[in-house]
Image (cartoon, rainbow, N blue to C red; front, side, top):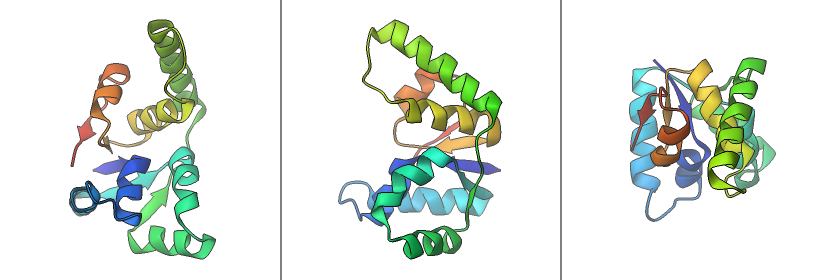
Length: 132
């Protein structure tokens, strides 16, 4: 079982978020016990500001989180879903990164660990979501 991680899950742990840190850490550990943990370039970019460059590498190694880049297919799927979002919403509120993360998880991993399940269910209905 390969679990893609949403940025918020990692940031909850790293920033010791008062509301979500414990649940997010527990969920990441549970996902790790079931198989590999992966992130895409969007997640890597979004979590980068929370670390010094050395600390980020150490964190990824310590938590056994692997970087798995997106593919052309996942990027195109993200674009399709972003287009659908723009048509439905009539404007921006979400950023493309959210769609790239969902498409990456849909095509590269077996599931996505996220707290933002409503959004991902709306646009990636076949994506298996793992919630804290």
